[in-house]
Length: 629
Image 1 (tube, rainbow, N blue to C red):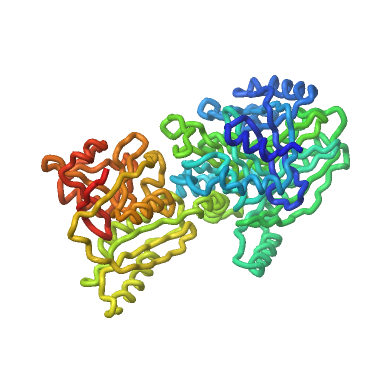
Image 2: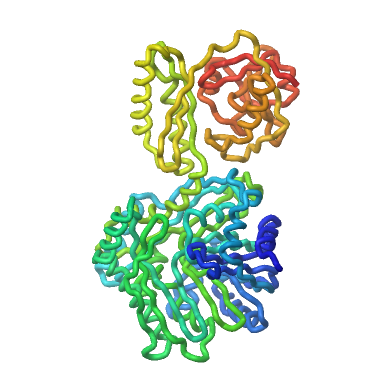
């Protein structure tokens, strides 16, 4: 029997071209999961003038029996409407307008098989994955100003609703499939997608159906109305009740339902278009969303292009009326949307097709922010993800901004797999934490970088309470090592252990055979992602050594597992630069200022010929050591 998980795991390991479309929300064994393998031909349209020919080629390949999977960017929608809207961002956006691949093979993996695959720790290790440096492309003030402009358009009667979007730009460390694996655990959705195409690496976790054609039946499920989950069932029930009664939410939803129904009526049999489950609220991991269902019977003789001309782009992500609203969107938004709010899906040889609206969709670029190759898992790949909300006259700009941030919360949850750490000394004599301000400043910078929900005043308050406990315990009147940890959700933990006096003899250290990667973000922040350091330290400690030194992949000295390192040659102190892949320790910063230290790349020869080797950290201070080579 053919093992589909082996096929997919091989494709992931070898970075082959493949497409996985998955319903990760359903627990049914026969959920709508599709795996496309063995690419035959790529169909791409980069300019609007190429779309018609690309669609003709898609029709031909479909008739030849191939399975087509891919996407249309939002800006491809300008091709299908009756009014010319200049694509302002055409030359600035690297994503194709249309990108499909004809595959020779299509498989239907079961839920059990996919869960087993994505739980395979040999293929998806929990280490080496982070989302960091998240930045919106618009300031809060700029966003509020634009919302006020939209309200003026509404007042003037140009539009009733506009779906205004922003974009998150961020960095990814780790494999693309590993990110999808992490997100599908925290954000199970009906329309998940992992596209590993030569020019596009796409991860989508969309809950919204754009259009599904099953024989002659068309179905669409537009979404409008979002609210944050409650803390318990009682709160959830109250929030759902509010959504179903809120005039703004109902107004948004019904306008879009009417727009979709009108679009359907252009291509469906007269009298066949109907609305089912109006104002239904579906619950996801972090939010509630209002969804309505529109169905219709397709007229005979219409092809995929005819249907796109009537429906694309989906009205739920433009607004109403569609064409005038698209003009306003083109004027107000500052970047091309690209695949975000376009369509992801597949076409079958029997003319059926299925497309979702790609919201909660991440585009991963093969180069970093400087244009360098980012294929290495330790590299910081540049990524983008669109977010947005529907704006009506009753909308509050501040509330809409918060809704946009809420919709991106699932992305930050990737970083739940690790926590931030600070370690520093409590001085029992003066009842103070040494260099506390510097440590708090550093952990707050890391929190901002990784998107952790943490406030400095909360840290200061808990540390002050902890200090009172230590200061009043006279029996244990000793200096302590304080260990402060903070989770992605802002949970704070503080612990301590008593410090024994440093040995007056010179401690011995060894050099690890392992090499750290200077491109890894975890080298520059103090986090729980320290498995390689912890294992090496435990082994060294068992051998009677004080610590263990690490070099990086360029054979440059980096740091010790618990300390920064300094060497002294001919009266001058040297230390590796930050770029070697080191944590900028607080004691390191202080030592550099006090001893006039020069930062430079340090080789093994430099280390072994040094007159002195000194290790520093905030708990032990400066410790003279001898390298055992």
